[in-house]
Image (cartoon, rainbow, N blue to C red):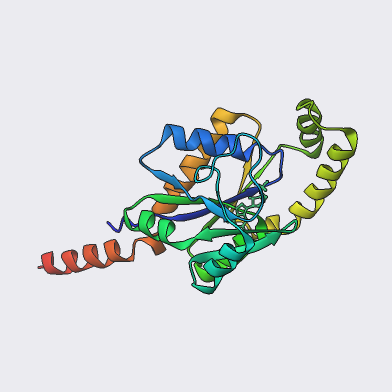
Length: 209
Ligand code: 5GP
């Protein structure tokens, strides 16, 4: 059976818990999934390590990567560039790993346009009230910041319907297993198994009396 990996884009509201879900999915299935590391021009936040969360590069370096075609897609988001390096993604897909890009919607739609086989997943909390509760619950943000995050969620909700599946995050464990099932189910889609269908048809023809 054709076992090239699937390209998956995961987007979602900030505060939806998508980062935690990704981390847990990779911890549970380290041989199945590979998470792409993006390049960005924004500065590292505390605790972030170059080459782990992102490849932190200058604007100049980023523009060179664009010019050389080294990025599958890129987007400008709040004054900074973010982009997906091509080499790693292609290498892992060829090795049969499912590669996950955790990117915003503009990038997601660009990837889908270029690679129509991409699976688009959108992570959302069960309702708006819950999103607010989580932002308040972090206890680290002022009311102003929470309000601006809630406003941003309105913008992030535009285009949700372009995604293939919604992942409703009400329980981490269930959510991780659901995401895994959706992706593994996707491997069985007939259009992803043309080679298998061709072979079995040929074999059946040969065995016909
Ligand atoms: P942050 O600065 O909070 O790490 O990320 C800001 C936004 O950029 C998030 O929505 C994140 O998913 C998105 N992002 C991260 N890497 C990429 C990328 O390579 N391409 C695109 N288009 N968006 C990205």
